[in-house]
Image 1: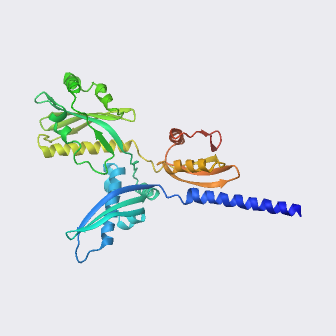
Image 2: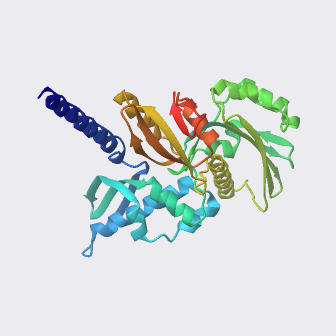
Image 3: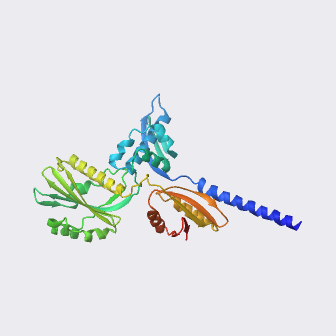
Length: 359
């Protein structure tokens, strides 16, 4: 009798353990919402007429959201490849959407939408079209444009420079770079004037350090007749680069053409930043990772990190025992880069065997 009772109790413990294990699987991975690309504040207005169709207007909002996403994560040369994406395909990649506001004013209907796209579906579409998207990472940078008129042998800085005055006008919601321009400081003004003949070799460190920003672009714009040459000193993520750009038949004394130069330079800088954050969707490595499952809060924390790491394409628990959870992680990058990212998130691994163990 005592043996049967012990056996019964063991079975109950086993069943309880299995239930807890299953709950851990279902609630920690399967029911977590997929990582998404979120596009907010899509605004549409249309006259309220007899043939008014709210569903068509919402579809237009979806198309606009998808277009803004493409502008955010793709370089200019790839954006056109998605310009004719059917609305049915766009809708199939939407994870969630919400109507933030709708109203009628003077027989005009106004709609504001938030749309979240399934990241995995978006990346699969890019891979099929042989496009390398980028992570939509916003960055605040110091920006200083200096105009050098070679015909007049003059240099224009700060408010005397049209490019400086108008740079932050007409910023787009899909732009990732946020520019901090310097204030009109007399010492900075005198330093730039003093080194005006050797600007290409001047490092501008005394000016840049005042703004507590590690990332910057110094843009030296040489104007000679209608030819424009721009030397860009770029520092992103502690990597310095020089980038020369030329424009022909551009008269920047004309405000409209100067605005075109601003738009072109912004596009070039956006593309440059995106190139630093490319996701190579053709590279998918499979990693096997184990973590001790004694502490559910640690499991939840680890999975939250996986959820919020953009280059992780997918993960799931494929096995568990009374000690460890075993994960399959699909990563868009190299093993070393995975380890680097996770180290920045305070995770170290024992990688001596095929199964990496969270320390």
